[in-house]
Image (cartoon, rainbow, N blue to C red; front, top):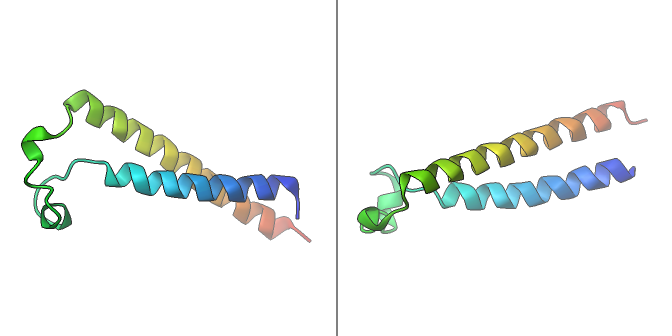
Length: 81
């Protein structure tokens, strides 16, 4: 197994965990599962607009790294003999 593939697989696992955590940190938009677990009770205490925007940027960045690693692992697997 090539070193690049091992690095990409480790990166995939780490970004998967970090992506789940960043998605769960987002403020609920009302209704749905976020209110079921008490998300509606803390809506007045929620994060500021700047913090939510920064969290959105971090989530998008992690998602792009995750998608790129998935594509690169697929390409390595396709062209591997």
